[in-house]
Length: 201
Length: 200
Image (tube, rainbow over the protein chains, first blue to last red):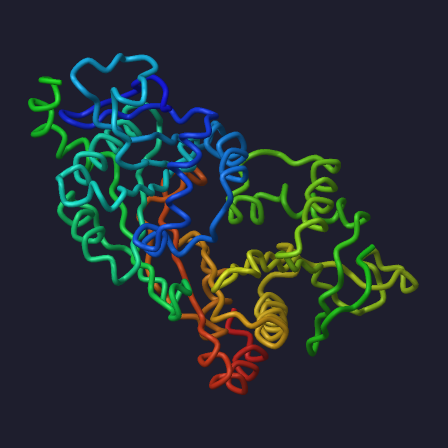
C-alpha cells in the first residue's frame, strides 16, 4: 500500500510509493494496459518482480519525484493507510528535479478517468515540483493522438515548443511526440490567482 | 591511442574508443568551449573519463567513436605516432525509434568542417546498420557550430525548449533536430556535397 501523504489537492492526495507488492502491481498497469501504455509510448511490459526492482532503482532515486495519486476515505490516516481506506487512481512522476528542467509524466487508470482527477493531479504535482525544487521550468510530452493530455497541457498554460516527428513506434505505427513547457515565472504568475484557492487547503 | 578504424570519411576516420583515450576525452570535456556546449557543469578527472568509457562498453545501445585525422603525427609532430584524435561522435539509445546523436570537435580543429564530415559518416553508419526510423540531436541555441553541423546534414529543426538549461551564466534555449531515414536517403548525395563544402 502507498505510504504517507506528501502533498494534496482538494480531492487527490500524493502518497509515497513503497517497496510493496501491491504498489508494484498497481504501477505494473502502466506497462500492461494498452489504454495506459500507448499514451506513455508503449513501454514494454514488466513482471511484478521487475516492477518491484524498478521501485528501488528508479522511484527511489533523488533525481526523481514519484507518487501514487490516491483518493482517501474520510478516515484515512496521513501515514500508512489500509487497503480499504484509500483508492489509488494514478501515478505522478517528475524526472530530473535536481536539474534546471524537470520532465513530467502522469497517468490515471481508465476506471478513474473523466472524473476530474487528471487536471487536479497535474496541478498539484506541478505546484509541488516548483515549490520543492529549484527547477527553472518543467517539460511534458504527449503523443499526437492523445487529445486529452494535450488539451490539459494547453488548458494549464503550457506552450507547445517542439514536435518530434515519428519519434515513437506505438501499436503498429510511428507517431509524433508533441512537447510542451512552462517556466517557473509563468506558472507562479498564474499561481497568484490560484493562490487564494490554494490557501484553503 | 584510439583503436581500430571502424568507418572512414574523406579526411577523418571513426575509430573505436579505447580506455587509453580517457586522457584525450578528458582534455575535451574539460575545455570550456567543449564542456559548456555539452552541458557538462563540473570537472572530470581521468579516472572518471575512463569509467565512462567502461560503462559505455557495457551498453549495447551505444556506438561511440574517436574522430581522427590520419596524418600520422599523433598530434605531437612525431611522424611515427599514428592517428591524431580530434573529437568524438556518439550515438545512444540505438534501441529507440530515433536514437540520439552527439559530437564534439576539439577547438583546435574546429572551423574546418571536420564535425560535419565525422557526423555524416556516423549518420550513414547508423542508417545502414540499424533499422531505425530516424535520428535526433539537441544543442544549446547559442551553439552555432553544433547547429551548423545539423543543418549541413539536412536535419529539421523540430522545436526549441525555452530556457531549458543554465549555462555560461544564463538560461539558454535548447534546440531539437530530427532526421528521418527517407530524408537522408533522398538527400544522400547532396549531403556529401554540403559536407565537403564545409559550411562552418
